[in-house]
Amino acid sequence: MVRGIENIDFSTKIKKTELLIILKKEASNISIMDIMNACNFLIEDAKYVQSSYKKEYLKSYNEAFITRLKVLKDNNENYEDHVDCDELKEAVDLLNEQESQIEAGEGFDPHFFKIYKIMSIYTTFILEEAVHPPGTPFPGGFKVKYKDGKYLCPVKENQKNNPGAVCGFCIAEQDEDML
View 1 (tube, helix red, strand yellow):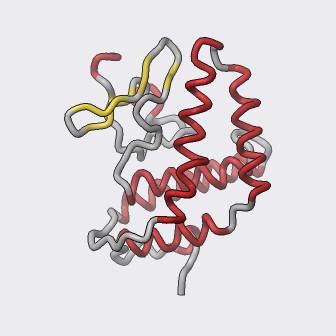
View 2: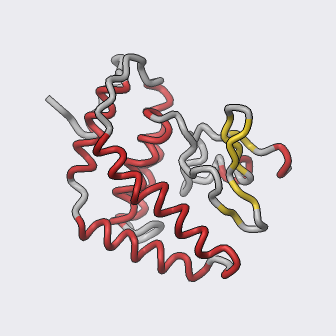
View 3: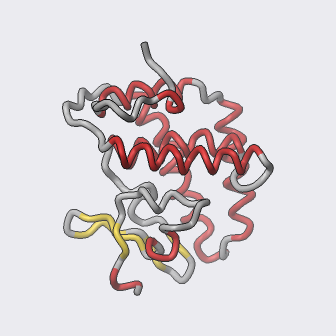
């Protein structure tokens, strides 16, 4: 039986394929209205982004969270390796904490968060990629990079302990050029 993210038994080994099935089930519960509301949230949120990179910001966030939802739904790969259950538990705990804040009226839009939660786990634990794809812009003209087989983030060190961010479990490393 397929269980949801909130019912994962972290005391047992979990194959990536099992996690993928769970994430696909969660993704199937995202409606077109959720997607539309999430897109509206991103557009509204972009009002506070410097105009010089607003278009690039929206493109990157749509690619990372909205467009990639279809990639997840279409992923039928059979993964033999297991996820690190301790790291996955930490990620799920953090996301559940963030969800509690949203339910209290703080943080992300709830429609966007449904997608954000699924995609953050998918990119980190299934694809083994950075949550924000290479090219994602950050203030100051800095961007996430992929170099020598590593994802490099310009804000990792400053955000890794931020309870409102997923940087703590994202596989990207701090871009040393940004320190």
